[in-house]
Length: 173
Image 1 (cartoon, rainbow, N blue to C red):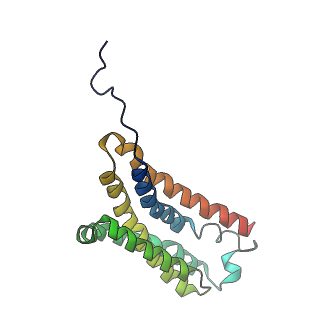
Image 2: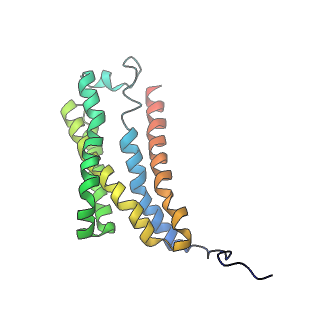
Image 3: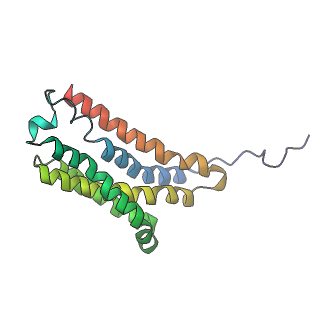
């Protein structure tokens, strides 16, 4: 019996495609990390490692620090496609990681306004990562594998959030 159309097995993916997709997804790990980074250290103020012990921060300032990433992420996600068209997804992805590095360094400084500024900068990375990674993976992927490779973005966002939660738990428990 002849195989039906669409029953053909897709060809295996070349190693260099896997490398390209996984390197693109490292931004997704930083995305998850950026979203969950403050969650573990802002719970109970009496726990060892709590942010409230290390930084003189009010609950309003703490809320501002947590929300700051979402504000600039929205702005970057809306304006990001324009910059991606100019620079290309690959170059934008490289610039995107600079926002995570600078934002991460600033959030390590125990000063409230610097932490909020770092979260604002990190939000640019989150928003641009949302615009960059899925289309880049779709461009790289053969049609038969596009869905499977495209879901790696969300999987790696979850991995980043999980890593932030586990490290926060390790330092605050």
